[in-house]
Image 1 (cartoon, rainbow, N blue to C red):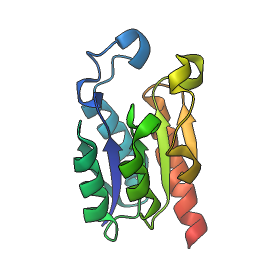
Image 2: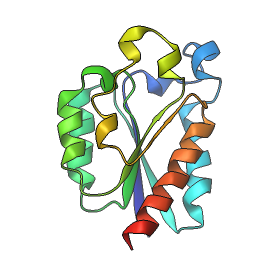
Image 3: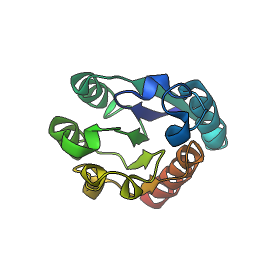
Image 4: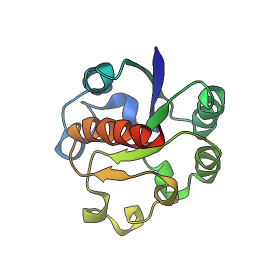
Length: 147
């Protein structure tokens, strides 16, 4: 069975409780389940990793860089200045998609630029938890193009 990474950055471990008016009421466990359903037809297993520490996310990317088929990544606030995360993703040889629950461009100015997005195969923003499903679909599309 192939493994797809589902990477979530700082503060995403408390989804469902954290500012539900912005991030919704779905928990990370709800999102993990939805993504697993989305990719099950491809025969993929989801390996979900959430860390509040950038270094732990970098380590996870390196650890799974050759054993995963791709990734859906919500870097959270690390999109703004997560340079080591950006460098780890630059060396990740598989396709990956960046996802954000909220529409970052409809929010504060400091959220309007991602140091990570230019490397992504695509970016999904502003669609809440459903955006993860779309990110998984996009990843399946990108990996099909690699075949």
